[in-house]
Length: 428
Image 1: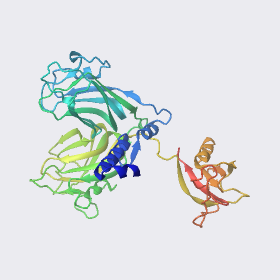
Image 2: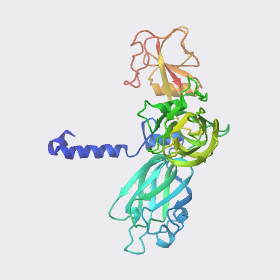
Image 3: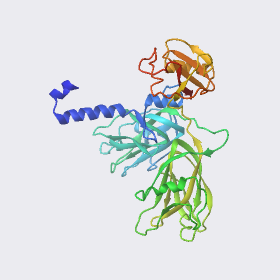
Image 4: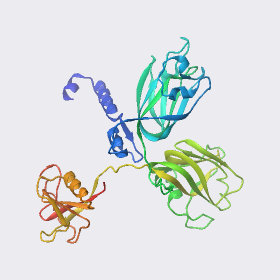
């Protein structure tokens, strides 16, 4: 890079660095906690025993006009002839959408199209966006048309949508292929469980994050007493819709949402009229002149956040929100968790089973103790590996560098000290 900097103007170097960075993260997914996962990491977390990319199948399609059958784009036949393809009318902003058979991690979308029958027609596929999971997967803008092309996506979703910004154009699709990995879900045998919420936002976030009062686990219904705080967005006839959005710790298949109303005189009617959304998809519209104290709303949809939206100018008052469904089953990002440095006694070892005396690393000790179905493992003096189901009888080491001995097999890692164990919990 130093040689490049000597020969290139500063702005060109910055452009090159940006392109390198963009290419590095293009095949990555941004999760709800703001962490980038590589495509390989996504496959490993979904199914560590099979990390191969798989074909995913679409169903229940729709499009902006009915001039051509939308299901011709998902009939598993690639016949690139106009009459055998799905097509819209010539219209502004045409679109096409289909649901996945099951929610999935989508890595790429492959689109096959055909030449339009009239040279005067404009193809919507010269300028379009692929939407999935409430996000933009890919934005395409090109002067020339394509016959078949693959587009990266990298997101968790249950649908694919193609939408064009071109006016007076035709969207013609001969086949839409989707690749990635189908997701598995927790608690399917035991029924829907409560989905853990991570953080929130609202239409008035400048008011000190008041949305947090709607999932503080205080299920009392406010009737004017002191002590219970609710999400309170006052009515404003000049304002747009008031809304509150709660993000899940993991993407989930939602079954229903339970709302707790604020029941004092000022506010009990604010939930008489609202819409409920999962990932910007409107699940239901509620209209009832009678206020409720608590109520369950069915809403089966996959996503990573739920949103309650009032009618314009009405405000929003919500004391508690719970979401129930099935969380995505993902392999933990870490196979083991470091607990701390603990003293040992060579005559009566803290962790009862010594399994190796030499050439040790953290991953090797983890594998050996996992095969023995132990809960914990400990590394000592750079080369010893102990396994056990309990630890700590001699207490935690007080010296700050008591477990700083380098691993003999992996010099960059630390493997305990002299009669001191670096103790780990086996997660997976």
